[in-house]
Length: 351
Image (cartoon, rainbow, N blue to C red; front, side):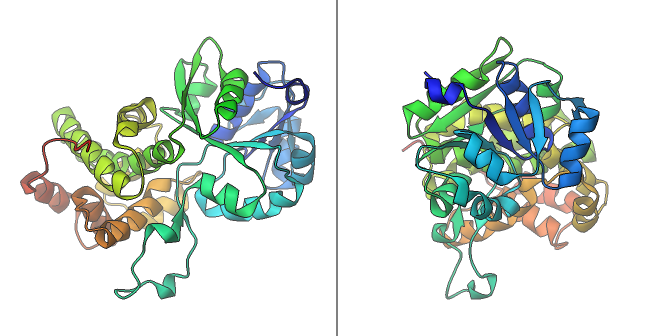
């Protein structure tokens, strides 16, 4: 159960994007005061004046703020939901206001690349030591011990429209799972728990790669059979590289694995799927990124996983091919012809 002291305090959500806003509204439905941190004072003021964020009304118990100190000092439970590229900087700014009693449950599905890129070469390849999940960033940059993540088929627009959904709260601490369940669970939003924190985080990160690829199939109009074939092969690839990075194969068959994979690989509401469809229409990756309102984590993840796969001698043909598309070394049409001839492994190895 949430402690009395925690339940009487406001809950913090850092990141007023589409998913952060959706999480804030769910929390507020429990008659919980919520501080929603926005990146700029102007955005916080606009949210409070319009009572909307990302085009959706915000609950009366949600108040936007640009004051990280206020969030850290007044909230025992905080949900950071910001792009991976900004996550470490955020934690450095937030850390002075955090104590070991805080609980942080992040909702970011990406890697932190904490390395000088000039030092990565054939003699010094990219390794797992160079990349961090967001839970690892939290522990590196703060005194917080009780850390968790949210992962699952959580398309923000559908959650904001109060359509049924579910997520996984993963943490090494059962208390963190219980707190997340008590704060977020309602009649239309189911909350599952898992102690496999790294495995669940990797599910949310790696499925973004496959979602980009599925988008290219949709953009080319290749049909649902081709997409199902691609997604099933993508799941095998996720498991192979996930295991090499320290994940558990079983995690990928969970709601946070195959569940999230299905949602983001079939929906135009998915940013990563949208990147793929636009690539298939002939747009450059630079133009796509520059015109997207929110970050598609899959683009960065493709580049990182492509290098890690080479380091650990894991053959990831989908990731490798998408990386070549992004770097204009292969067209989308050529990529799909190549993958149709590739001798994929048939089954997932759970050993």
